[in-house]
Image 1: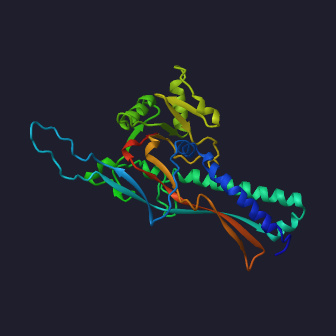
Image 2: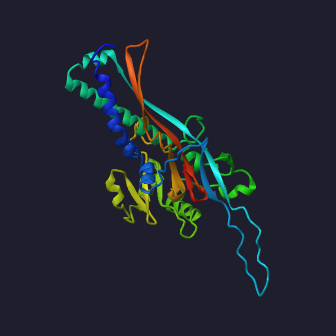
Length: 322
């Protein structure tokens, strides 16, 4: 290959050193991913054809009221099952051409090029996963994000291998609300979603919204002056409702650069029941350098594999505005 023959080894070593750092930081570009990581719900999985998420859908039925020697019901009741999620795979490649090598022969220039390539590759992985966690799962190669797990049409479709349209699977449906910004009380609509996803101590932990929801909720609060908690200091815009942090996970107006939460959506989430499940050997992992046999270039890659899962759709809600 043209250029510095030692460049490849230096590049590979630099990527090796950065891989563990990336594992700790790829969640930092989305408030949803950051929140899941903070809650301890980024949990690695270690194999199998699919990712299985155990869940309970009923009590075991063995609560017996009795008197005297009355017999107890010993019949075994089905109370648990598992949702299954396909493992999705991602590769972020970093390519170096012979022209770039020759233009960066000097040691300092070489190091600057390596740093730029690695930094750009890291951003690519971060931004890609930040987009994927809001996907609807319609792309067979993309993970099933919130639009899949917390659907706008909760009583239709199959999620995690469980048919939500079946009458006896009503427990596998998320809450869905609507709000007309111009006429409805946005606070009331969000409170309905919070109550609709609360069961005693099982209650929502946070609300994630796009710019439209954030702006309309802010307007509703101006006269009441109820603002922010300390989480907002972490670089994410935040308000609060009923003690729950509300995060804007969209931001910048340029569509190609903004967060990928769908427009006019507010997600009321109990993150005790939502997980990011990366494979333990792809979280991410570095693929060995590949030299092209018919081009003046070689490439390195980071590999990630996994999916998002849920063990309780009924504890999640979405309110779609218009």
